[in-house]
Image (cartoon, rainbow, N blue to C red; front, side, top):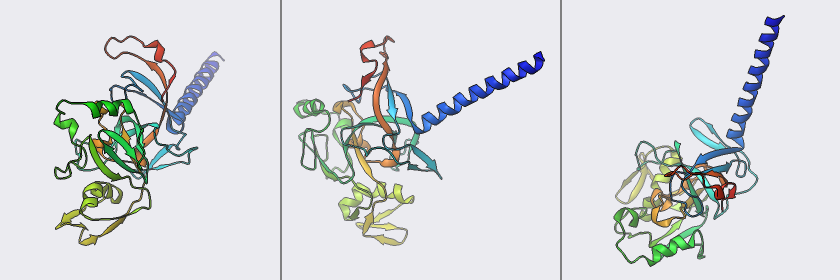
Length: 280
């Protein structure tokens, strides 16, 4: 009798632990996730050492199938100015090919939505001709800087010297929307070739100012996914879409909602005032 009760207790304990594990796993997949932010790219909104709560349900949980991702129906669209967590868009130090790095996560503010046209003028973002977007104080610092910019900070995509795009003057850059057809002149090829290769899953060849897929000449392209321009609030120290390029929708994990806890990464002391503060 005692042996039976012992095994019954072990069984109930195992079922309880297993059920709790399954519930936690389902919550992490469909509802919420948590990340520690190590860097300074989102200062002052998010500080190094912040432990943030990421809402996956807002835009719909992301699921994988055959190495590609699709998204369940969410409650709201992605909006400009929201702080988002997404996968880093390159793997194995290969910056020539867009590939989801599932082990590396970035948190940035959404500056450009699909269908937007974005420019940077004198260090300030303008989207569809409207300014005041993102952390204006960070942009003002860039605009007013009178020293010499480090080369690694100054130049931006597409890193074409003849274009002269920098953190002070950049664009116009059209952010592709699913279904948009783009005529492939030489400028469009420079801007969108890497994105097209990602969507098509095959390399493209650019010869004599013309783009080829195998032996087929491509003169226009219809985008298959939505793309986003992500910017860090700390404009001086943020590896964002100015350098990474645009981010496809399926790379986006969710919306940063709350700083649950915060710890100074240098001293190890908790920052109690930042506990349970809303990410804005």
